[in-house]
Length: 143
Image (cartoon, rainbow, N blue to C red; front, side, top):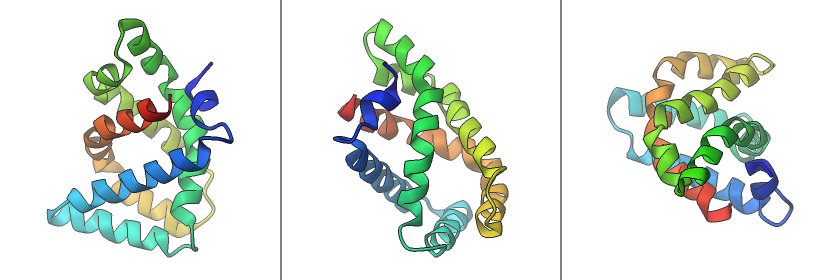
């Protein structure tokens, strides 16, 4: 059974999406400097696409993200601590997550979404790596 099966069943789906949205907000709040301003501006633009867009996008991405993380998570389960394994392998974890968003953005028809992603993609891996410990805790909470 993969992470999507465990985390996105009808009993847990809304809670997982909500926790992931809170994680995004927390990560954004912690950012400062020019990159922080750029991220916060981009996030505000995406929130303006339509009400609930961020939660919708998170819900749409999570099944593929969890599928991409299954190999790393399962290695961690075999080693006895999947959270620590994701964190220790944060570069690999970030690459798995970004492979999903990279593929998905190619299909996006809203120019603001695609343009925003493309502008920020260069620094995305660092930000995703920084979020891995908290994201791993969200996964663990429901897995």
